[in-house]
Length: 238
Ligand SMILES: NC(=O)c1ccc[n+]([C@@H]2O[C@H](COP(=O)([O-])OP(=O)(O)OC[C@H]3O[C@@H](n4cnc5c(N)ncnc54)[C@H](OP(=O)(O)O)[C@@H]3O)[C@@H](O)[C@H]2O)c1
Image (cartoon, rainbow, N blue to C red; front, side, top):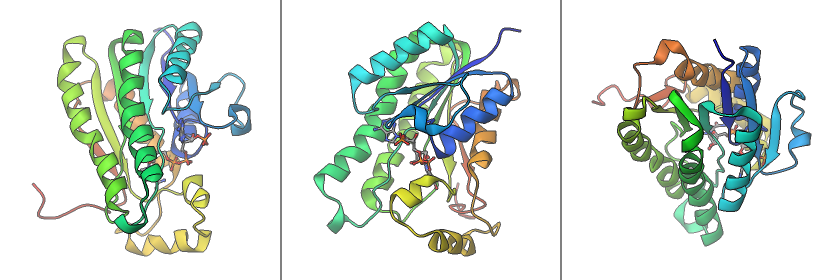
């Protein structure tokens, strides 16, 4: 069987980095993108890491071209780059609002559009969304926009047997929270609100992405997999 290939946006840290390392350990050839210096991510040398701002269509073009050069075609596109600006409406300014929609929604949409020619028949596309509510209306709206987008694309790309799904992490211990200035003890205390009693790890989410990309999931498309330890589960939900 040919070696599988994966492109992971926002793969230089947290969930994306854990996914890159897990897939590499399973024999994938992997390329990741990030906003900062990709060399600072500390990834193994055989993981191709490039700087590409998800808000910039020119950067996306360049990253996709590098994926074509290095990987040829793709079996997995993990649309994971994201930013969080949690907070109430009163403290969400225009820059925060634009960043939320530009990175999470526009970046994911155009990365997929431009990477489409590289996707193999039967490839998997996975959006990172989020199980959280109460993190602020703009963040919830930006992440929420990804779900109908994912479901529409699952139907649109089904004729090419490309499967499109989402993973929705609950609270996962990644550098995202320290970047927001949240102290580790505050993060640890959030486990009290998790039915399974612990904060998630990046590898909890990476395993779900690897599953959706695997031969075990070839009949799953248009789905949103919660990886939340039970957070966001509503017993009366349809
Ligand atoms: N952690 C959680 O509890 C949680 C919960 C729900 C959803 N999520 C989602 O999970 C995804 C990964 O988050 P994480 O927790 O792993 O955070 P993280 O450790 O901060 O990683 C975020 C990644 O996105 C990249 N990124 C940020 N802005 C970018 C941009 N403009 N262009 C390209 N790449 C950009 C970062 O690159 P640099 O490192 O170079 O900046 C980094 O690789 C995000 O979509 C996030 O919204 C996380």
